[in-house]
Image (tube, rainbow, N blue to C red; front, side, top):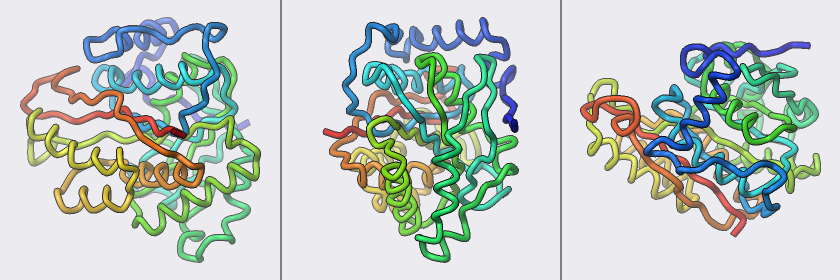
Length: 302
């Protein structure tokens, strides 16, 4: 069995099980966090209104106080989950623009998360239904995932709130909206063919404006730019998101996966989106003089 190793454990988040459990717990009670942990599985209700979550992926000290807002909402939405479709950002040029992870499981200090290979195989085998341009961008690929952190950092949060689930990891580049829309609609069709529409949630991973690179941007500057990107996200408008990012030079890394999520959830009849938390690294792990923005958003059936 091919298992993807936890390459960021011990650096971006704690590398030992007990330490990681404590670290995640502390994020819920961080000053930026929600102030409470999810209820135990036997105390939760089955609401099933959440179709998608947008979640950041920096080191836990910086982004996890924001990220846990989304995982708390997910835990409060359902007791059980079959599959989590993980749309990560391609931070490198390795692999095709839509790189489907070929691993059977992903390892973290909390254990191995099994992969829904039936869904991923269906996505590859039926890509002939798409345009040639898009189909050529989709394939199983290991290289795009070997050192990619955007998907890996989501998995311990899921392991913390669910005991049994599968994941379906896909890395997505910054593609034109016409392609992300087609791919999002296609993913929704594959989900329906697998009978998962009521038991799957999609997580798209992105950080917002990166003001810690040139040009350096402070907390207020980054927050202002991120408002321009969050408005179309909350309106569930991927084309307007692309325009806002381009027009304002917003260095949001995961535009591709977020646009895919917005189109996928549209096809699954999403009706609204809600911002749960926004913060910058200036509020969590560093100076306010040069910061990165983080947002936690949920997409809902109503």
